Image 1 (cartoon, rainbow, N blue to C red):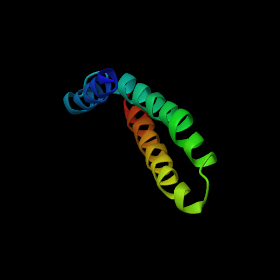
Image 2 (image 1 turned 60 degrees about the vertical axis):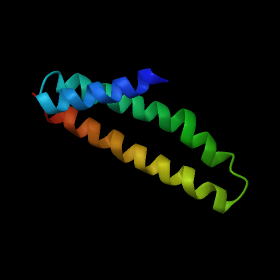
Image 3 (image 1 turned 135 degrees about the vertical axis):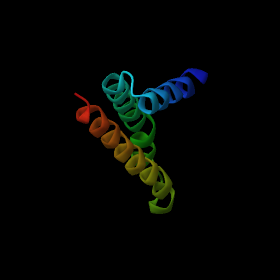
Image 4 (image 1 turned 90 degrees about the vertical axis):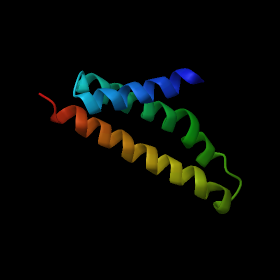
Length: 78
């Protein structure tokens, strides 16, 4: 449980101090996509009705956007 928070903090520190930014961006993107596929997508697919689907779908879209932003940061580093 604490390992995920430590990984997120490590990625943020890598971005801030401009060290290993490409690796941190790719790993953050991978982490977020795994969360989307293993947590949010099953919650959206197994929601009983549209009202119950709203919050997991919001989180799915948010984490997909954050993964895309991490990939963008990783791609801009040379």
